[in-house]
Length: 299
Image (cartoon, rainbow, N blue to C red; front, side, top):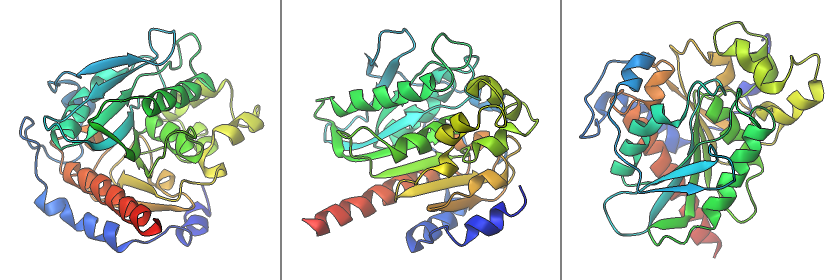
């Protein structure tokens, strides 16, 4: 995409907080139940990890795929909440299961995790806009939860790959009853028309998700394109320079901060043993702390 980098670079916010976070790669701490691995993790290495078990499964709609898994840390105190959206090229071939080790590790790190399953391409009602509508319904259901361990005054919306695309969109228009403090995209798809014109394994199925190519249905692509929306004011993109599925051009979004990770590939972002793991945790913690401080100052 000629000119994309030049057009957006000046718009990317810089933050001393996040710049400091990028230096943590060398001292990454691996979660206790997962072994450390080298960068550029292949998908099979993620798929073979053993997950824990969510404490609850909550339906947010009538379809069997409309549910969220609630993961909680061992401590009984109220903890910040991460609403997580898995990726998989929006395809029903890739469900929530491959990210359970990741959500297990997030809970071990002290977060409550609301991990969302949703209808995808190939499912009745999946694709655009059904998949996005499911995310909105799941977030509305999160806002209704009364579990004392959920601190709903501290909520981050986190998504990987195609799930990052949906998270960025949901962050621009989250349900009114849910106060989202930060939106974080892990290898997220930010420019949907550009992605649809690519030819790798994930890019080539974008048309199936949308119901056509950009030139045929430009209005729908406008609605579904994070780059065409006003980003949430605390939007952070974490992207590996070795990502071959979602290219570096997708890691730039007006109004967002980009955190680059050297040598990281696409699936490093959801492998708790990958070097980037502690960076993700630190960005989550610090973005929530930053927003909590702003709220306190505004009182």
